[in-house]
Length: 437
Image 1 (spheres, rainbow, N blue to C red):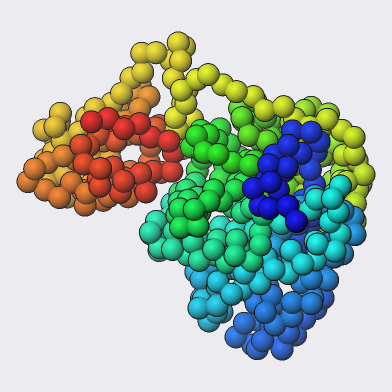
Image 2: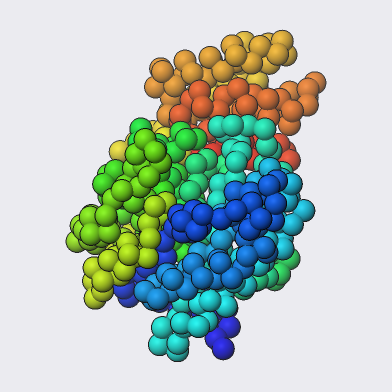
């Protein structure tokens, strides 16, 4: 049997050779079974799809095998909501590791029945966005998210997932926390845990956290990712502009995993397999994609049409940009066209008596307004410095960023000589910031 390192090496080779296909929606297939509370282990856990890995593993295996009949390249585990954070809503948080591990074991066993030496089938450990976001809903900290993601990731890898997939990302801070948890797991296991990332773009053109596709890409471009892509939220037609933009930027392979159209007033997804495959074919024609599949509302029939359509088609060639790019909510490229970069330095207690006084008074709103005015006046980057020897710098920068986030869209320059302060600040900045000290 090929070890994990060799399997991932082969996966990377395949990503450069042909279009790879991911299977379709797990939730749609579970819903079609019309299960009872007993199937979920009782009324308290009814509706928790992930507990079926323990209570009805044969049903989950059967869904995998239905998709595997079409021989996709990648199957996703039934673990979208298997963090303790999500499972706590059903009283199941303490079983998060076991549920996640079982998800991988089931998918691995099912795929082994269809895998051959000539046709490898990879298991992606699905890691959803959880039910809390740092930037949007609040009620969760970076460190708490890292702990929840770590438990899920460990279960998935211990169960045999080939790689992890952070998907349906709505907030860049959440995915950064997820990646931090995966890095931590890799250090503990003395291995590199492979990971791919997929975001969801709302109809208004950004993630719920506020970043557009370019801002998000800039935030993660330094990572070693199997691929980056978009999934869920809309059907493929609404993804076109975002996929085009990403294809012009990304040094990673690109995945497009759409819903079967937008849901109707009853929550049903009605885009036909032929239509879905036809739109995705146009993405291949443009040279935009490396990985295709289906999210909410898709069925084995959708995946069958995508597989047939994509056979013997050329895959996208990644691009490499020799540029310095950063981001806040909005992207910013530092090149000959943008130099000199205008950095607003009035949100700096060492350079502005007014800002220092407002911080001392706890008048954070007025402090934020100083930053907003600098941006309106043309600053392309905002310098943030709270180094006052008479105050707790870490608490001040945490508090100020909580007020500032979402109020300015330009990249931040974090100005401190204290690594602890910088670490805490980075946990609260969704973009790719500059560090100045």
